[in-house]
Amino acid sequence: MARNPVTAPRGILRILWLGAVAAVMALSLLPSASPPLQALDTLPINDTVQHLAAYAFLAFLPALYERRATLAGIALLLIFLGVGLEFGQRLVESRSFEVRDMTADAGGVLVGIVAGWPLRDRIRQR
Image 1 (cartoon, rainbow, N blue to C red):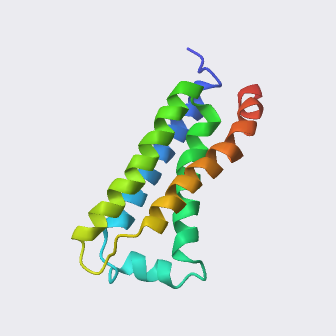
Image 2 (tube, helix red, strand yellow):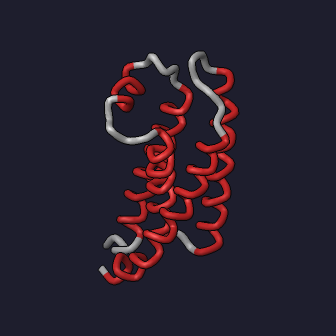
Image 3 (cartoon, rainbow, N blue to C red):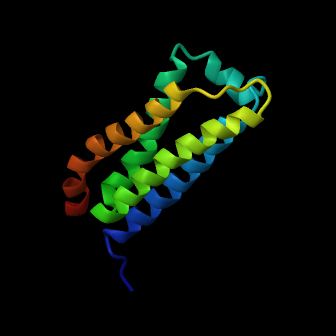
């Protein structure tokens, strides 16, 4: 049985997306002294830009293959995830709650969708 050329990449992108969501969740709830966060701190990238980039990536992948209604639901869930994780950081030693990070997360979702949406047709044509 032949694979549908559209569903095969979609499955790979979904697995990649789930891994990225798990990574963002884990990194958001680790203490500041943890080795992964210490490594992130060595990058010459502002924390707010890191938030924006992470959530842009999380929104970019589904923007490539999900239907409009599904993508809208995912976008809302990602925004709620960013807000929820920010509140969760209040429970983690040496982490802080910042509204600016929530704003960057939501902005990243928008950036990811705007960047990914135009590429949908190109991916479907392959």
